[in-house]
Image (cartoon, rainbow, N blue to C red; front, side, top):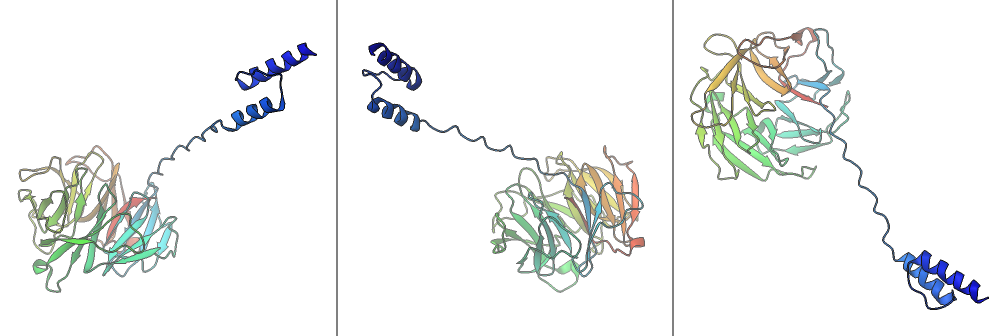
Length: 333
């Protein structure tokens, strides 16, 4: 009997990993159970975040009162819209980091959530104080909206940039304005948080921190011969931080996509010019997509890297043949 008791104790000690003075009594079994229940559970591993899907479409706005169209990539000369949203037009558009599409136009920014399908309605609308012309985002997810609040001809209007702080929801409003005065249709933000703005034929830089008291810190030397009728209308960055500025017509009588390399300052000069019909809007995601908005009211050209002054389109899609009068372009999901 004593041998049996010792064997029981040995088994209990080995199983619980504790010392025991008795013979496997009820009290020692309770101690084993309590010790086992106090052990921390094995943590559940956090799921590995899935990478955001790459761009699959090129989106085209057809003016303030037109529609919104999406074309599946890759673009060919025979591409047709995969998505059509009548009345979804605006002045400019941009995707945020979550894939939502922000369309600036009228006194509002309309936000479309994924998936974007034919006939979709905005998930919500953010009112703007003035007429919205362009929208871009900084690294923190804040939205910057170029706006005009004058009705005189384009060359004498006054402009502001409204800021909508992240996280952006249906209850968001503009938190402050950066007064910039002159024409600022095209805006963009670089990786350093610098706000670049197109002032008719010039490009100015507004340095962070960006507040209601921010002013233009510098202008690039004047390099784009423009009249007020054909301003620099869009700015975009590639993955290396190079700035692409689309100008509808220059002194040579044709459009230019002017390319500037960082860092940006009052001494920044253009690196080269890509001739692209009468390009007025550009978007980059590896390839360069340019909208021809003056001559045939609807050409979409695609350029592949490396880019240079001798770059030519690898494909051109006639949007005019599809009845689309192009106004802006964006690349996204």
